[in-house]
Image (tube, rainbow, N blue to C red; front, side, top):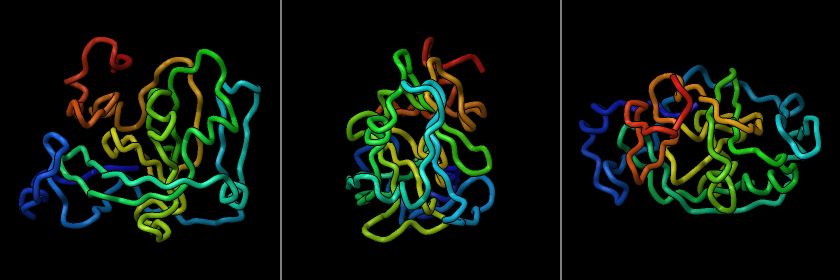
Length: 212
């Protein structure tokens, strides 16, 4: 459930410049999101992997089991689609590729839908979450994420705008064709690559997304 910053707010704060095209450095880590901050209950929390899995069926992880998965650390900026960047974050968590190795997608899977609390979703190409390109973050700079920033789990995809990285993640759906997520249905670019400034759906070229 990310990201929702106001362009005017950024201008008023006088953000500095960053290397990403069209972006300026934010003077704080913004906490805008769609919907309320959910309450967390570790005994009821569940992370699911489902859809077109190599072995049919849903694989579920309890909070304790998810915490036991191999951990990783990356350093990466967080880019908001409304032209702000929160730079040099140290993210700890579980790589998306680790989850894909544990629960392989079936042949023919091209995209994933990442699901979060309240039914929020974000669609990504499979290539966006392979290798070291995406992390299911639990910590920022060595500290657990705050509830406002997505505790216990948020997706970080450094080369994509922040709306592609939901807070409060609860599952991954493997898909054999593309389907738009929450903000992608509401005017944001279906791919969202920062280097190409793919911010809004009117910028999409043929083949970059399903019909609106």
